[in-house]
Image (cartoon, rainbow, N blue to C red; front, top):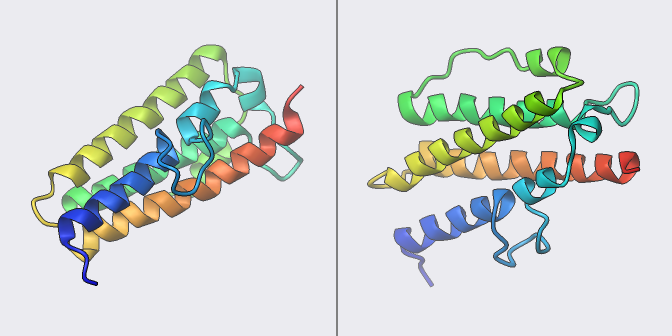
Length: 156
């Protein structure tokens, strides 16, 4: 059975939404989206790396935001310029309470811009809309898993 484009777009957006915000019963348990997970993390927890060669949760959040920004530039302007993928990992570890809140706010603002851009596309082509939505979902789900595993280790 063929699926129409409107249905496909909505299903992809639902998976993206579940990754970041709302439970749809697709692949996450209730209250385990990225934003729900981060809401329960304080700046001290966000600042603690899990091990000597692991990033802090704050760095994970900054990296997800950076990834969204790179894909946003690709989506909006077909910008494929080189990005410094290591900068976040080299520069973010410990955060103050206000820095932690700002990192989470930046993530949410960037996510909302990208989703609005995806929703506003008149027609989804396989590239860039579909590939961008899928890449963001898969990448963020991976880091959500990393963050949840880190929380198992650092929760006091």
